[in-house]
Image (cartoon, rainbow, N blue to C red; front, side):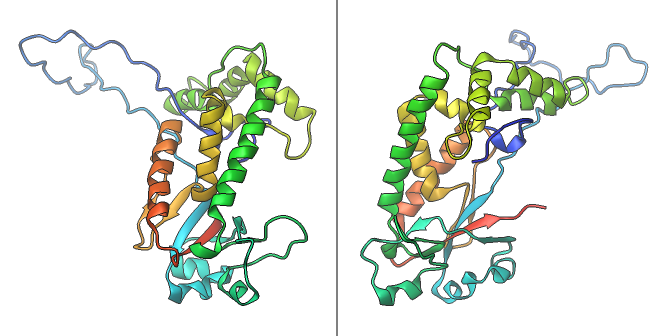
Length: 282
């Protein structure tokens, strides 16, 4: 996930807390009359509140279940839009099994050579992908990262995640400009500690501000989240053509998506081919 250095983006949302509305009137025995439509010059008219703006989930990487017939053509990025209706490139994120035989390499999509570590590819039959190794590696890496984050933010109070500020901006762009939302988000001591660390750190050691809410959920939650995300990423296209992804940028909806996608992945046959795609957005 990309970091939020500088101006935050909508894609870094985790969970947005919708600003509370005015308390509803107490229930009575009689049914309440519906609000009147606003009329010009009518001071008693009631205007229904506009629906709250919901930040959409940003899908950068998608896992596709492909048929045997499409497996050969999907290795070429120019065929993605024609066969899948998406624009993107193959993403070599999967680990090949350590005991991969020479004759099995042709069954993997976009297999990359490597001198050390697991051999990576964009997909292939599940039986040739080291999904368990990927999940364990992501869990361990996230656990170490959370421990480091705990040290960086020690002594600071829990911070309000960026999507809360974004929610308020989207609901009232003129009354709560993006510049104000950004400034108030950055003003929090915990966010300042993370940004200061990122300013002094180059490379993979930086902390993703978009993970703030997940960091604050605890070490186990953070590690489990990234272990599942390593396999399911941002969206999942099933073998029947059904696409599933988070209903919104809210962290709760991201968890719901990962639960559903992980269950589906576990139910697949070992011969089912998976294909990871980095999507291109206009």
